[in-house]
Image (cartoon, rainbow over all chains, first blue to last red; front, side, top):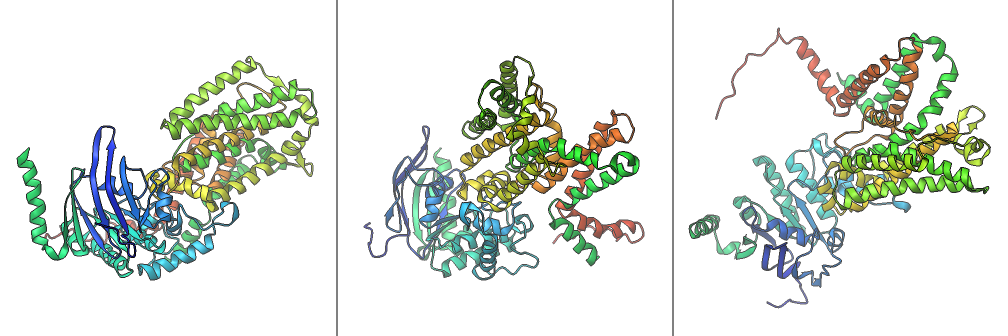
Length: 260
Length: 352
């Protein structure tokens, strides 16, 4: 597959491998996400999803392989979370996106504060923009929740909404959602999925990781199934029904078990 | 109910207000029980003279605890900085010796703090262990260097350092009170209005969140412990210069009182949130207790128990107000009052 220079992929991974000591966490990972595409990443616990996310977001580098973001090759020796942010990769984690004891406006800008000289924070401007994001980008209308509210006062779905709104404000090319609906009630899951629809409306690329096949199926354009550090399948949504996808995953899991 | 709630909101919003209330109540209690002492301005001047070293330590410790860490090595730094200053002041025959000693003492504090930071951030040693070990080690080194002897530096009284840091403003206000207040203002802005302070709060809240949001957790911790070392050394200097003598055990009595001041002030032991204003008042509560309880005429054996009591009261007030449970309680009080009369019939929830 060649890289189209006019419309490069939002992200492209070539032969990514990751070892922890002698343990192989990822091997031979090749995949790409097109702009304005939502890719569902499916895999069991320990399949390597989190490791892959951490490589994409600059938490740690891979042992080998190449990565391109919007056609630009990433230099892994200099790649970091800040660099990933600068290159347009934002992540929403299941439980570590927001500081719970902190107020909302701090959560929007932590790590990339709007500052006066000498690193002092421009609180007024940060609050203004945070308010704007809450009202317009994510359409937050919960009663009693303001930019001065602490995250601990928000429901699980609202928290993910804040994290998604933050990612969209910082003009992400690729938003990674890592198990954003774990431990949420059905109503809250619905809220999160609505936020994800807003990502798509905004024309951004997205990698959606979840255990819940139903959520993944509803939201994604394409599915990538990962198992024991390897990609075992890439399926377009139009080529498979939810039931068939579910069957495929079950069968695969059983097949492996029988083989052991 | 509505006015009650808005009142609670005001109390909650003004930082350190509940602790200030506790301080006022305490002083009021002393005014009633020991009017002779507490109507005289001398006692307040005495507080402004004795509290600042502990206040300075408390301010630094507030940042450390907000980051979810602890520092047990500051008493040793107080001793070490006092020794370094006294030694250079006494043994160098230069008009600048006093300033050289001053900055070397701060540098010594920075060195101890920096090594603490390296152990904690780079090697992952829990801060309670790393700094407890540092407390023993540097305290031992100080006694060793001093040969166990005190160093008399009476001549310091005629130096500019003495005038600047422990002189009397308008012949009445101890300069160290102004310096410690100035430090409190500076650290309030660092913690609440600077990205370094924001990093401290997020690290204390959840280091994983801090990391994925691009905060360099290790570097921030090293900077923080180094800052604490400098602050503790400054506290040691204020103490040594005020009393004109270095003694090897100086600072060793500060550990628990300073921690009490920080917790009374409303800084969360679990990290993520700290109150500089609270620590300011907390330090004065701790400082006034000793003098106050003795002045009331009861035996000084009471001091410790009263301190414990005040600490529990202050922390309970902080928890109730700080976590918004006061609204809860005021809402439930009428319910509790009517608990027997209007008890709703207990119906087990229906399963669908």
